[in-house]
Length: 378
Image 1 (spheres, helix red, strand yellow):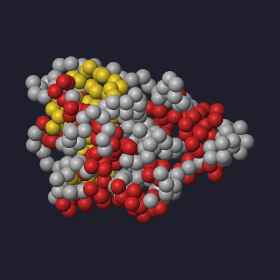
Image 2 (tube, helix red, strand yellow; image 1 turned 45 degrees about the horizontal axis):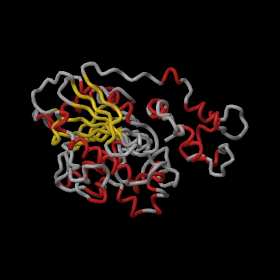
Image 3 (spheres, one colour; image 1 turned 90 degrees about the vertical axis):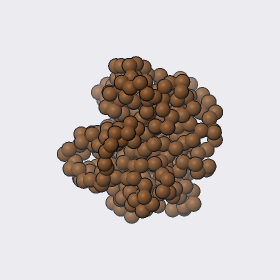
Image 4 (cartoon, helix red, strand yellow; image 1 turned 120 degrees about the vertical axis):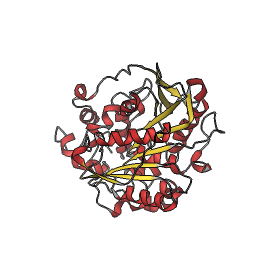
C-alpha cells in the first residue's frame, strides 16, 4: 500500500534495508511495475488508486510526472530518523536468514531467536510473527521486534517468517511459503529444543490474513503446497493472533475504506492477479472463511472500528464464522482504532492468550471492546 500514511510508520522501516546484492531494490521494482508505458516516469493515471492522493507531494519539480529519483526520494525521506538499527536481543541467540524452502530466495527465509538461558526445562513453545505490507511490501527483518515483548520471559522461542511478495509470485505462493516455514519449524524442533506441537502464529494486516489462513486451512492440500524438504509434516498451529487481517475479499468494498479493493491494482487484485470480482473462484481460495471447520485452531482477533484500509467488518465476519462451528475465538474491538492498532492493554491480552494455549496457564477469553486510548497506537 505504497504512498499511504501507513508506509512511513511501518512498511518502509523494513523496506529500506532490503537491497540485496545483484537484485533491484524494491523501490525500483515498484517504479517499474507502475510505469505501464515504460517511459521512465509515472503519470498520476499510472499510480494505484491508493497512491494517487500523494502525487503532488512526490512530484517535487512540478513537472506533472514522477521520476525514479523523486519516487525513491519520497520513499526514503528522513531515512536516518526512520531506519533504526536492529535491536540486539539480550539473552537470546538469533539466527537469521535460515532457508525453510531449500532455495536461495531471500524471501523464503526465517529468523529464529532462542533464549540462551531458558526459564523452563521443557521444550520451548514458539511464537511466530508474519509481517504485513499488502502482500507486496514489508519483510521479516523487523518481525522479532514485534514479538519482543513476549520473548522477554525466556519461556518462548521466536520466529519471524518471510514470504514471496505479489510482485514476484501470485496467490497461493504466499500461504505455500508460510506453510513451508511451519513445517520447517516442526521438522527442526528437536534440534533447537522446540515444542513442535506448540506453535502460535501472529500477524498484522496481510500477515493477519496469512495467519488466519494457517489457522483454518491446515490439511487443505491446495493451500499446504509442496515447498521445502519436509512435506510430510503437519501445518497445524496451536493458536492464531490475527490483527486486522482481510478474511472475505469479495465483501471488502461493501464497507467504507480508503482503498477500492475491487480494483485490479488494489493489494488484493495484485495478490490474485486481476480484479477480484472478475476472478471470484480464485479469490475465494484466499479467504480464510472458506476453510472454517470445527477443528480449526483457537483465534484471538484484534481490529479497530475506524480502520480505513481493512474494514472492521472483516473481523466480524471471521469471528462469527468461527463461533458458528464452535471454534474458540475472541474479538477485541478497538473503539475508534485505525489500521495499525496495537500495544498497551492488547499486549496483556496476547500474553495471556499465548500462555494459555502454549503453556497451559488457565485463562478465559471473550469478545471485548477496548478504547483506543488504552492501546499504544491510534
